[in-house]
Structures are given as structure tokens and as C-alpha cells.
Image (cartoon, rainbow, N blue to C red):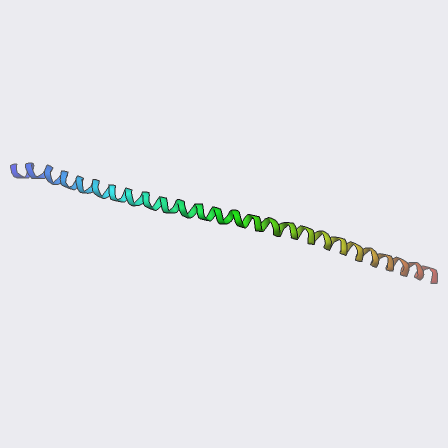
Length: 95
């Protein structure tokens, strides 16, 4: 029993030292992984910033095309409504 009382604290200390070493290794690996993740996030942000410029250009072009489209549709609608108004006036005159 006396031998067990002397060896048990030594075994526990040895296991705690191993646990501490494992925790330190995991901490170091976690720091390395976080640094890699940080570099990837910075790279993605740089690429998104460059794409934002492209999307701004596309947005500007889309707005201009939409404005031109609305103008053309407005002109066509006006022309068609004038044709129908003339047709309705001629129909009313004939009646």
C-alpha cells in the first residue's frame, strides 16, 4: 500500500506533464492554422475588392441599358397609342 501511495502521485504528475505537452502542441497548431485562415481571408477580401469594381461597371452599364430600354418602350407605346387613337377616331366618324 505504501508503494502505491508513492508511485500514484508520480504517475499522475507524469500524465499531467504529457497532457500539458499535448495542449501546447495543439495550441501551436491552432495558432498556425489561424494564421493560414487569416491569409486566406485577406486574399479573398482583395479579390472581392477587385470584383466590386467589375460589378460597379456592370451595374452602371445595366442602368444605362435599362434607361435606353425604357425610352424605346415609351416611344413604341406612344406610337401604338397614337395609332389606336386615330383608328378609334376613324371608327367613331364612320359610325
